Image (cartoon, rainbow, N blue to C red; front, top):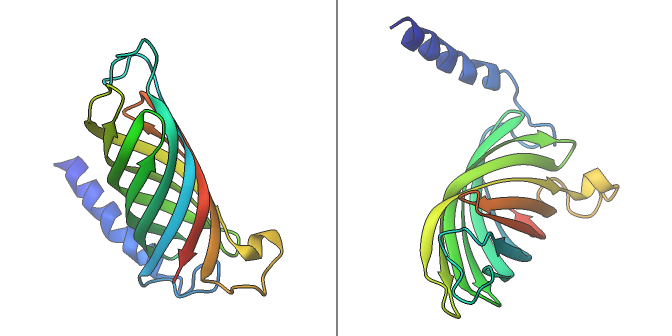
Length: 182
């Protein structure tokens, strides 16, 4: 019971700390909704011991072109959000799609650092099965102000994203692309 009381007190204090700031580090309002869309490219390679098996004696892998859409909710210098993705694969991967939650911190004038977790569906081809499981990741987004181009888009606009994810700790999925914030 004591732990529950401490957790409740901590949870009640969190919004108060976040409410003390009225703007985020990049000058935008500290609270609101920030939708975004983006296009990423990368490569997904699975371990031989993954749930996809090894029907041809190798491991499942392939290139990806991914579209993402999501929303961030800023809470002062930190944010929470949700994101969906759909990816067309090449090689052994036909399609990938999923949803994930994100939590992170704003960095510099227009950047962010985040961690994500969610659920991913992967459709294999060339004898590989279709599977679904948890996906975890980390990433950064860098805006124009952080690389010396502050007059181009303002606070919202274009950001470059680099991220790395793992499908149930059986793969590595590095991705890079462009995110358009509104």
